[in-house]
Length: 403
Image 1 (cartoon, rainbow, N blue to C red):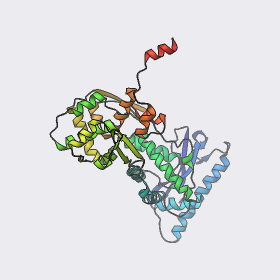
Image 2 (cartoon, helix red, strand yellow):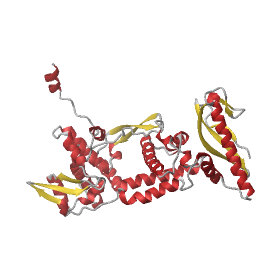
Image 3 (tube, rainbow, N blue to C red):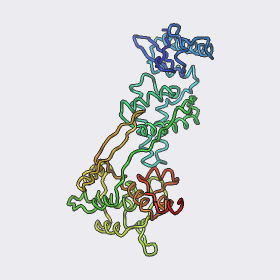
Image 4 (cartoon, rainbow, N blue to C red):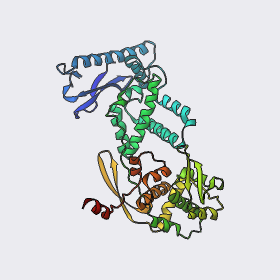
């Protein structure tokens, strides 16, 4: 068995080199972690042109790759066994790249989740779990094996294409998966399992673009609150949403709306509890309308799942005629796609918290840092990305200052 070398993307300016192996009527690829300028590659010789910078050294590395894979194959052949392509790739990584013989990348990822789960919030666990599942699904159809030594820029571009084109997900979702991946690789590097630092390069970047979200104006919240509802589930979901619009608490903290968490502070009643996401203790002043809603349920509002609540909220929004047309710009790779929705189609449980922050900010009556205390934002930049509108400029102030 003698491997052959080809460019993965011969029509691009740069391309990774792939080593193609054949044995027992099987053809498989082995990543070698080498990228070259395509015009410097000799297709006939399957090597770099020696006149180019570092051509001799790179060709020597390709010779070593070829010799290593041949030796691995014949060692197994002498023992009378034929290994799987996956096993050959793994052994190649051990011998050529000095990868420690220990957990594979996916095995390490799973162990990391199991070890850290007791210390994580549910949302963090979900992010890591979803990332692992997505990577396993990607690995099942990738033409290479996902392991520490194959997580390079070729993997990055292939994984990006998989999520954006095959899975129809957006750049922020891809960025979230890469962010988790880089954290796991950092931990694996600390344990000495990872010797590949491609993930630390600038090209291996985490996308985090401003996402389009809606908020409900105070008028729209009042329209929801004014609905005459007979269904218990509709009433409960609506009332919790309205409370979220007035207090800014997260859906995950709705179970803290119990009588024992409400205290008297001076002349006002406040809600005191520890936030599930951040573990911070927080004190929120309660509007009389919140007390009124809680008392109507005897401080025991039924809680439904997030997905079921989102379904009902969209129906409630339609019933309240919150049907303004909303234009969103969706980023998918390098393309921007315009999508139009009725506003009620986009209402979800988190819209309540976003509406709370945005409406307080727009009122101009509460200082930004005071709102940030209630929302838990540490940086103004993060807060301004969170609120979904900007204050109107007071022209009288501008005239008094500039004219």
